[in-house]
Image (cartoon, rainbow, N blue to C red; front, side):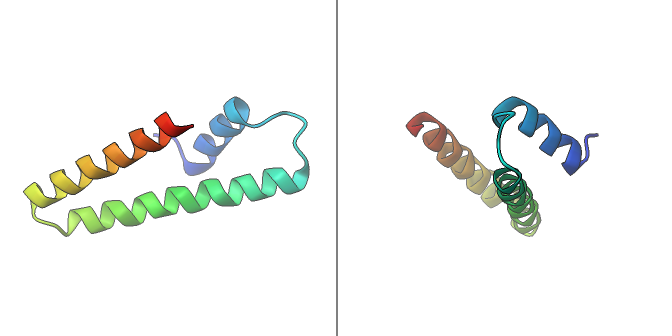
Length: 72
């Protein structure tokens, strides 16, 4: 399984311009790790819910993510 840093390096290679400044890279890395941590927190919250509720909440999160992607 990939580490968070492995995933960051994949994201950086595929989504960030090679000529980005060190400040841009630092800010993007902070945002990437914060987003990953937020998802870990959401997973922990889901684990505490009854299964049916967790499935419904997870579906809503998927819908929200797809809507965001479509808005770009």
